[in-house]
Structure formats: C-alpha cells, structure tokens
Image (cartoon, rainbow over all chains, first blue to last red):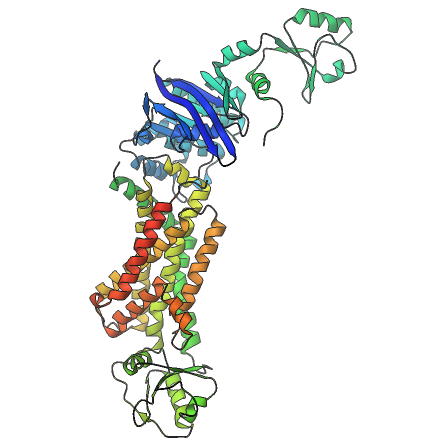
Length: 292
Length: 341
C-alpha cells in the first residue's frame, strides 16, 4: 500500500524542553496507525505537527510524498480529545456550519447515518451525553470526507458500552478505506483497532510494528497469574512480580514452574495463564513509574 | 488560498445564532440601556441638584473680586475661552449658566428648559453686585434627556462591542473551539471578520431599536440626517469592536480579558462625556478623554442630532474613529492566535 503520511526526523523544541526529538515513521494508506505513549512522551506534540497545526522545529511532514500545502486541511479530519462546539447550536447546525467551511462536503444524511446521530440531531450540543458528543465530533471530523482521520483519545471518559459502539464506528470507517491515526491510553483499544502501532517515550519513537509482531518480538514467554498470598514468603527459582492485582510469573517453561509450585504444595485452582498483552509491552518499554 | 465568502458567511451565521439564542445576553443588551435611561433621567432630571456648573467668559480666572456671585458655595465656576462655544454648552445642558465679563457690562445666559439654570439664575440675581444683563438664548433649547440618551446608547454599544468580541473570542480559545476551527480551512481573517460583522449587525439592530423605541416616548430633536447618524454609529461600533479584537488577539484566560476590558471600558464610560460633561474638569482628564473613541463618537452624534452637523463636516472625530479601527484591527489580526500556547 502506498504511504499516505510520513514523518521525517521530526523535532520540536519548546523553551527548556525538547518535546520531540527526531521521530520518523510512515503511515500507509488505508490502515489504522496507533501512536501510544505515557503522558509527556511527546505524542500530542507529534500529532499536532502531523495535523499541520504546529510547525516542527526540525524535520518534515509529507502527505502523499509532498510537504504539507495550503489545501492539506481539505484532506484531513480531526477529532480532538477536548473540543467545545459553538454554543447554542444543535448537532445539525454544527454539521452544516463545519460543512460550509470546506469546498465540498459529504451529504448530511450519510454522516447522520454513519455516526448514528439521528436521535439527537436537533439537540443543543451542550446537552449531549459523552458518547453522543463523541459521535457528533466524529461526524464533524468526517464532514469533508477526509482521506486521513486523526482521532486523539476519542474514547477517553466514555463508559464501556459507548466505547464499544465507538469502536464499531471506527471499524466501519476503516472498512470504507480511510486512513486513521489514533492516539489512546487504552491498550485494549489499540490492539482491537490498530493495524500498526508506534510507542513513544521521552520524545523518541521506541518501538513500531503490528501489535502481534511487537509482542512476539519482545515476549516469548507466557504469563501465569496467582494470588500473591500463595507465593509470598518463599524462595522461588523463577522471578515473581507482585502487584495489587496479584502475582505474575513470566516464563518460557510453564511445565517446570507448575512442577515447582505443585511440589511446594501451592493450590493451583486460582491459576490463570495468558499471553502477554499490549499493556505488558507498554510497561516493559516505558517503565512502571507514573508520569505527570 | 483566498478569502472565502462561503466560510465567512458560515462563521457569521453561527456566531449570530449563538448570540440570539443566548437569552440572558440578549435580554441584558436590550435591558441595559432602558435601565440606564430610566435611572439617569430620575437622578439628573429631578430638582434639588446640589452642584451647579457655571461657565465664565473673562480675561482672568473667576474670583469673587470680579463679582460676588463667583464666591457662591456649591457652585462650580470655570473659565471658558470662547463665548459662542459656551452658549452652545448652555443649550446642551453641559453648563447651567453662562456669565460673560468680556464686555462693558456683565451678561448671562440660561437654558429655559433647565430647572437648574432657573435656580442658579436666582442665586445670581440675589448675590448683589452689578446686576448682569439677561440675554436671550438663541436656537431651540434641549432637555437633559436629549443630551443624555446618545451617551446611554453609546455606553451600551461600547460594552456590547468590546465584550461581545473581546470576551467571546477568549472563551472560544480557552474552550478549544478555536483550535477545532483552526483544523478546518477557515482562515484567521475570515473568522475575525465574521465575528466583527456579526457583532456589528447585532449592535446596530439593537441600538436602532432602542433609539426608535426611546424616541417614541421622548421625542428627541433631530437636526441632522438619520443616515449620517447611522453611518457614524457604524464607524464608531467598528472602532470599539476592533479594540475588543485587539484585547482578544492572544489572551488565553477569561479573567485576564475581563480585567483588560474593564480597564478600557470603565474610564471610557466615565470620561467620554456619556452622562455628564467634563467641562471645568482638569486639563489632563480632558486630554485623557480624547484618547477614547467613544468620546469622539458621542460628540459627533450629538453634533448631528442637536446641531444638524453633516457627517462630511465631522472630519476630526471620523479620523480618530477610523484611525483607531485601522490600528486595532491591524495589530489584532497580526497578533491573533488560535490556541493558548
């Protein structure tokens, strides 16, 4: 697939801070690319440069192989994490307003149907629920029929049902052949939606690939989970990681670990085995210290 | 990418709908001048005002040595350089009485429509000394309310222009609405023009409605042209709106913009001659008042309404208003930022 968007050695300096330091990657047409990273990793700054809203201190952003031009905004759609719409306007009026800002736009009926806006189309946007608001914002982001759609933490703050519904909408958009660039703090979301992910930390891109390939690259182990109380106070031949959720054992040799546990008389009825997840990978690569 | 009328139109309509549906803001815009008219009419039209203002045309500063009346307490005496200008001030209720010592015999003028003028005349005649000669006021005398209403409408218009643009744009910036618009092809010039045009349309409509409404009950004199007055008001509104734009160009906090707008609007409200004349006040106060576009707009509006001056003859105030617009609009557009950082 041809490359649609390319970041080349992107650098962004602020006074006293180097927010992005030489980030390069490309996004192929028609895929969903997830940009992940802890708070302060530089992903928002990177996204703003890719959106054309912030000028890089160094490096370049290319769209279809060319530097961003005056008409770039005609080709992209953006859903920000937090956006206030024009007060006192209904969803329909907001769609009409944003539609009029582009040289051409999709039919309202199509947007309304695709984003399920029909039930609250004539409601003041100040009176929408979180899920309705995100769907309205997605409709606005799609109004110009963009080739590239930026979604900045689109499901933050939504309840599980609203989040699942939103995933279905994004899935429909993907199937329609659109290219998406998604940022999220939910690894489950990234795994479900993204064909490819990039993980940023301290202004650098530290990993990039498909979720499965990255997991395979960083983990050839299984994860065994048990209540911490069953393993505490004893010496084991394998490393045990304790957390509030319980104890975790990562091993390539599940049989030998189980044998040792059984030999020590540990009750295995509460044992769970799972493959490593993107959460594990994220923590492995970016550490477990909380960021501000 | 050139200026797009389609985008400009969309942004203008969106902002106008927002204002019209914000009932509290709309109601306040309509109620404020009514309350001001009623309040000021009650305060200034009633009897028993404790202070009189008397203009004195003389070769020296007014003093009791000139005439015993000039030593009367609770009366403000100040020296006027030109007799003809002073006569107009009597007719416009800017002073209660004019005393002329420039000739052989003292003369005085009052406005027959002014109760304060009548009272201060009695004080003059009872003060002793040489009895001054009463002169016939020429021209149609006007009431205080005729003089005050342009000021009240002007102050309302000033608040609406300054806050309707200055405060609203900052709110948009803080809430992220400007950032969202920046992600569209909408250009800064189109957005800013839309805000200004929308505000001007609303301000001109509400001010015209208020003017017509007040006129139905109070019957203002109109010596000049309504078209001239409309054009002057439009230019004045544009200059005040552009001041609001300059305030809002970069500020990211409503608290800061509110403070800045208060710093501009409060002295403008007091010193622009909206409610009372600055005649006799210190020179620096009068010089400061000259900075404000509202001062020039109100003096020009009164000149059209009360003296029948043509717009074409109001070169200086128009120059100040247009100059303010050009300077504020240019800097406001140059400094304009979509986001807070």
